[in-house]
Image (cartoon, rainbow, N blue to C red; front, side):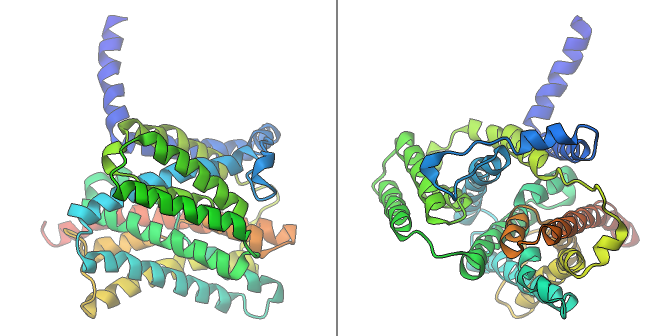
Length: 389
């Protein structure tokens, strides 16, 4: 027993501390969820994913299932940690100038406009498809992050920060699109309350309040008021990440997000059933528009807008990042789950359209993930060899 223990423990500690360790667990959890959804245990998996957990105080807009609580509740912690990391990079890192911040923002804008236009072009003439134009506009930070972590040194640190900043800008813009084009009238008292809480948190930070409980309580209140107001609640995580003083951040928070929140998210959200699915379904206007919007529209929009911004001199590439690497990362921007799935439920009422749209999201995201990983994993090495590197 001594030899195996001495052999395994150092490796387990290294796996725990390695950024790629959490990425592996997320991917494994996602594969497990997908496998169970397409297995004889699909019924049990569905029962767990849809386990009722409604809380009356949150009203009709509140999360009502385990999956919704993870996606709208726990994922707020993920966005908070991402914002904290981006704040650090803006302060003294890879986003420390306006030109460096401009690139992911402009890339996010291009990555929204082109996929939407691609969807509209592909689905023209299909009257029931029109409302789905915003489905392929979003990049899912939760699934792009583990892929670039698995790629290790093949992705420059500054490029990783660029992709995460782009994904956050993308999600924020996606929330604006939902509010403007899909949202119903907000609950104004709740929205006013959320605004007051946010102002209070900003004031607390400016006054140097150093008690974690103040920000924790404020974050819970802000999240609950966002839910009651009809605002995407993960926005509360973004707001808390922007307000929270960096010294108060506990190291254990990142571990909880990496080893608990993200694997749960992947396990519950990638469980798409392929029962009755066939290749012909992907050729229908809605799934084809969604899939090509993610696989083609996203990289063309992100890469094209980024190159144009660089040529015009309004933005600069991340350090140690070539256009070749940037294109590979732009391919990964076609991974869309959270916001895309949320928009599906708002865009369509026909269950058949909802299911085929989800199929398009799944197929497009899978192709985007594989193509981006293959490009960055193998094509970069081939280019380096060709140049004699």
